[in-house]
Image (cartoon, rainbow over the protein chains, first blue to last red):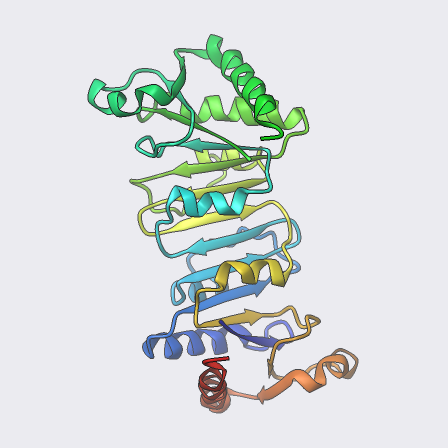
Length: 151
Length: 151
């Protein structure tokens, strides 16, 4: 990983230079990433014509670092295990979907076709039929979270 | 890190349950993250009223995994060093801004006030005044990238 910074005043043309560089480097089969510091931004600039978006489309990975939000875009579909690495320091990670992924307890909401349900049946710890079951789901997590502490 | 999955058919109410769970768990001072698999999405769902956005605002870290894009939101301003960890496998990382960060070569676009420039003067490898200097910047990167290989 070779890191180079492009600095300069606001509106000096940093992004235009970076756009040129990423295109030229990518043409040479180099894997290029882009990290933008946006100290005055809100970090939500996903707009099609924004500076960030322009560079985003020419790099395979982009980060936008704002005062209260850091956003990372990977131009690929990461596996659940790859993504979980970025969450290691948290207490609870709730995963929506990835139903074919084994190894984690599963709360089922509603019904599921038998052929989909069968291979993961043993990992379904609870079925939520309606709002009256929400507290059960919460209790299950709190109970098992506590029993997992210290493991 | 305690991982739990919420699974179910499309429109079964997974996100509503997750919204309840993240709020309740956060109230109990737990750090909660949310990973959503969106196999049919384009990964750009940053819209204020979308499902993802609703949960995003109640967790401190969110990932959205789509077929050709994975997006991660950290509700904090990461340091350059923290962000660079996610780019380790790439060849070149271009950093825009972070001008007070030491340790990396810097390409300056345009002018910079003397008091800002002075502390980082030794790291400025090139000054770009206009488009005629773009190729110089590219050459500088290519040359130094190659000399860095094998280090």
